[in-house]
Image (cartoon, rainbow, N blue to C red; front, side, top):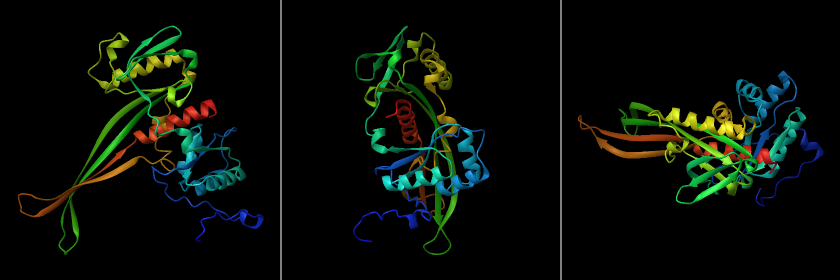
Length: 295
């Protein structure tokens, strides 16, 4: 209880072990168990039930994870031993897995931001924000990962309840904001680049930018997809973002504006909860690169 040493796995205890999926904070080092797609036509009912039990998800989510036919993060735990236990339990149910260490993703290493692109026959020139032009050969590009994210903000207005010390919700408002990112990976994460719509000059594509941001992003994405080839262009994040929340939930933060008075002279408290998906996408993007290169 006090020494901190993990209990050994014995023959008698191996058959009754179950994973304890405690929350691992974003800043903590974690180990993610990535589920490989099945080779056959579909899972058995036993596999669906076992997957839902181990990952702590409902059967509908488990079915959707397997139907995606993609390698997806299933759980994130704090030790390699816990990840090994989850891997063993999934293996006994007929699933293939990979353990991904957070250190492999190098989340503290920021990709270089790109301002402009110039496509050549065998290479692309990228103007790095606050930097110089960088040439990247087409053959050196391992994968390009596209992300389309929805961030939400919920504002809550609470007033003093009838009973002392209680609060009464007076009004709520919800806002959505869509954001985009495209990651280009060459030989390593240090040689990765990120294209974001708020800092990108679309005139370098030889087009008149549309007043609709989505149209500009679609044009840029299509140019990149054709240039690198469909096999190296991954746009799956938008379809699976909800399915990976059990392992990598979006980051959330709470902000309070304190107490204020309105026209009725009563005290009200206004607060907001913001959920941001950019960190989740970065994890997913780095995972796709790691799986592609076998890092």
